[in-house]
Amino acid sequence: MNAQEANVLLTKAALLDGRFRRAPEDLAQMSIEWSLVLGDVHLGPAIDALRIHYRGSAQMIMPSDVRAITDDMAPDAAVRLADGPQWLRAHGVDAERFQARLAAGERPTRILRELGAGVGDE
Image 1 (spheres, rainbow, N blue to C red):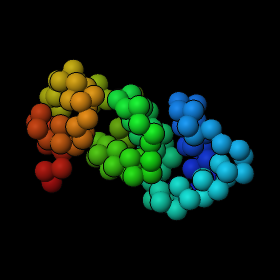
Image 2: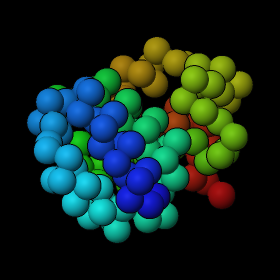
Image 3: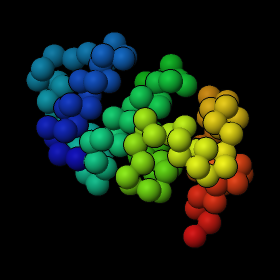
Image 4: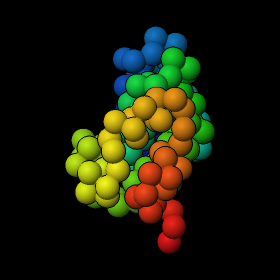
């Protein structure tokens, strides 16, 4: 992720979390710093991580949260967040059980492994 992409991510975060609202100069500097931490994270999965985070947490998201969530995303890069229920069904996972455990704060990879999807067993 470059600084411009980090700016997009932080702007989206500000729409969900008012604590991210900053003066343009501060946001630009913040974008540079976030891009240094998230250099190998692509914007699309980072935006998905942002949405996942705020579905289950009122805590302000940090770069480490983005990294942890994107690291735990489905191993198939072609799978998008919108494909989640279909992907879960295709892998024999009860979507409601998965969502309940995710809302309780468990990491997606662990849930999938324990529910039999075989993620991370390779």
